[in-house]
Amino acid sequence: MNIVPMRDLKDTVRIEQLCAGDNGPVFVTKNGYGRLVVMDIDYFERTMRKVYEASAVNKGVDDLQQGKTADGNTILEEMRSKYGF
Image (cartoon, rainbow, N blue to C red; front, side, top):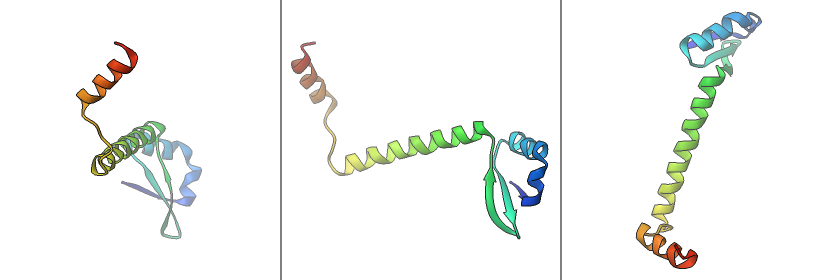
């Protein structure tokens, strides 16, 4: 984990290297307290994809718990009769 003080943000090359090198976030502090997070765009996109996937799984679990599901064969039969295939 990389932690840098706010004043070090001026050294953009170093910050970029820290983000790309560890392929993770760099935590920026101000007066000793966490203030910002800087990360490589590839790391951000991978993280957001995982968040989206976890959210979709949670929604599916919620649907299952609430009985908002149907048997696959039943749905296929309904589609065959409705659309004639």
